[in-house]
Length: 250
View 1 (cartoon, helix red, strand yellow):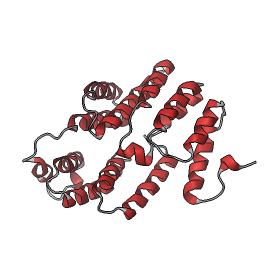
View 2 (cartoon, helix red, strand yellow):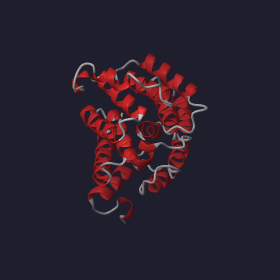
View 3 (cartoon, helix red, strand yellow):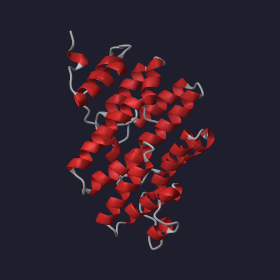
View 4 (cartoon, rainbow, N blue to C red):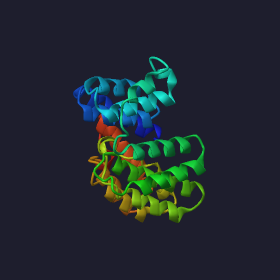
């Protein structure tokens, strides 16, 4: 679901974090989760394996690696590896949220819209009561984003805008905090003249996403600037690769 410019920026950000913290479980966990979402399954498997080597008794790490290998058997060292990883594990807390999110995202990306809508709805219904788990914030954000995207695909702009605002009520999650959310739905709604809801959403995600260029984007959206998202992408690109910040140009 990530556009090319966002994907390039996130890859660069995670590469830097992994160089700085190669053996920190929180970084490995968040990075592996990101690479799964970005469809780089070999890199995700490499990071999950490293995490399991560091904490071999952690049930959730083994469960995540098992699930990835089950969906991508070509990455397994042997056919029985996915089952061996979880043979003696209880179901970890938050596993339902993670699995429902994976099902919703995979279904949408493969064109199974009805299934994606069902899984995303179940995901949001299952989230209350699991606020202490890392997956809660991701469930709230991405569950609403998937439903909003489906609504917009069907021409329901009002529904999509409501889901976007709800997505912005997420408290954040490791992948969201570090790499930021996918702004595709926000960008599409800007093109549909829903700048008010987009601004509310951006204010929401700014509570957990410390992106230096985000405040510029919010200001441009609130001012009704037609090139707000393009200016934001240019600002982010300049912050990563150098060059003047477009917002500072005369």
